[in-house]
Image (cartoon, rainbow, N blue to C red; front, side, top):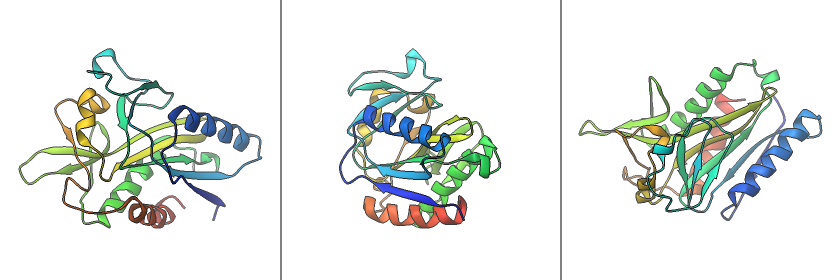
Length: 208
């Protein structure tokens, strides 16, 4: 099994500093001076615009807006949301970006399943979705990755108990006809620490 380090931040991390850290770590991995790393953290309330973001995706800049090199459109990060930045070397993992994204989705699906939530994939929509009893489909977890010379960074986010009203300033991931949800919104009372424990366990099963 590959040697992999886990990093956990106890307080919200500035977004630009977090991206700078990832850039440095990825460069060190390329140079053979650092190993694989998964960083679990929160950010203060903010919006990020991925490489596919359009001007119509931002309705109201209620929070700071950061341009970022990950794939995807606009998304929200904030307290109560677990972000996982995943820095892996795909040269030893099959060099398949689509498979990497599938594994990240499966990681989140299995994690949600541990809390009794059935997370699902949807064709043409990256991320993990929940089908509500009334027929609505809502997004509970997002993916945005970047790959540089087969080393991945950025990663995933799972809504544990964020303020879902904060999403109203954007079109989340460019999909306006569907809403967002969280474990708390679904009636699951879980702490970030409890989610972290499950993330670590399921990671070993899926991305080992």
